[in-house]
Length: 101
Image 1 (tube, rainbow, N blue to C red):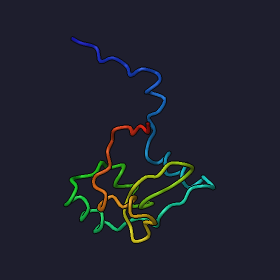
Image 2: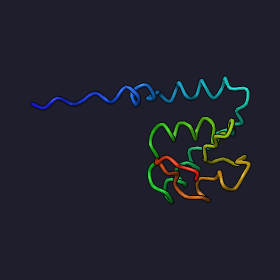
Image 3: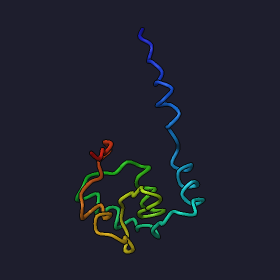
Image 4: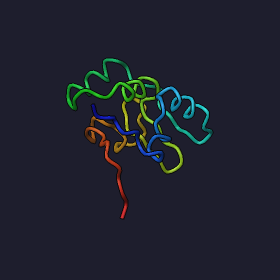
């Protein structure tokens, strides 16, 4: 029998549920958010880009996209303010961290 190791503490403290993220976004005074995307728009994007994770689908449905501070989360919706934030136009968002050199 092998034991599954616990995640390192530095990683474990960063795991949050989508509901916590949604509450945090709604409470930020500096957050700009969309009005959410329709289920039809989400399905159409998935047909081009592949199935999205459940939490990202919920984010798209509830917010569509968001921008706060220097952070932007690409998404969907008729009110996406900048072309580079449109997930269909720019392609599937990467789950890998981005580094600016």
